[in-house]
Image 1 (tube, rainbow, N blue to C red):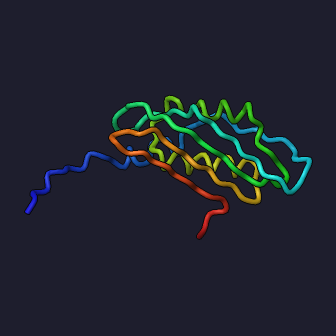
Image 2 (image 1 turned 180 degrees about the horizontal axis):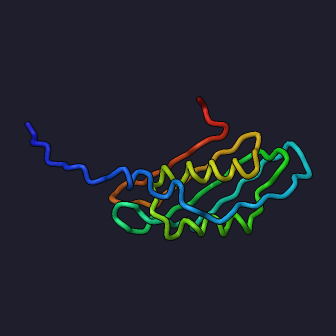
Image 3 (image 1 turned 90 degrees about the horizontal axis):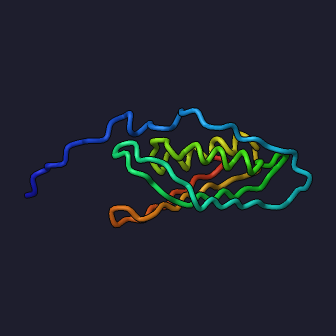
Length: 134
C-alpha cells in the first residue's frame, strides 16, 4: 500500500485568485447586421499561476453570434493585457473572460476557449459557453 505523502498546498486564496480583480473595461459598438458569427483569436495571452508565480501562456479564442452589440477590439486588447500580471488559474481565466465578454455585449451565444502551452508535460484546453447551462 502506498503511503499518502501529498499535502495540500493550494489554498482558497489560490483557487479564487483573479476572479474579482479589477480589469480594463470592455467597450462595445452597435451591431449593424444580423445572422453572422465573429471569431477573435488572441495568441499571446499571458497570466501568472497564483500558486507558483510562474508565467502561463496560451491562446484565447472568443467565438460568438452578436445580437445588438459587438466587442470593440482595442478595448479587448487592453482587457486581455490586464491578465499579464494577474494570478489566476486557467479555468478561472476562461470563465472570467466569458462572463465579462458576454456581460458586455449580450450575444445570442458565445464560446471562450483557452489553449494553454504545455507545462509539466501536460497540455490544457478549457472551454466555457454562454448561455450557461443551469
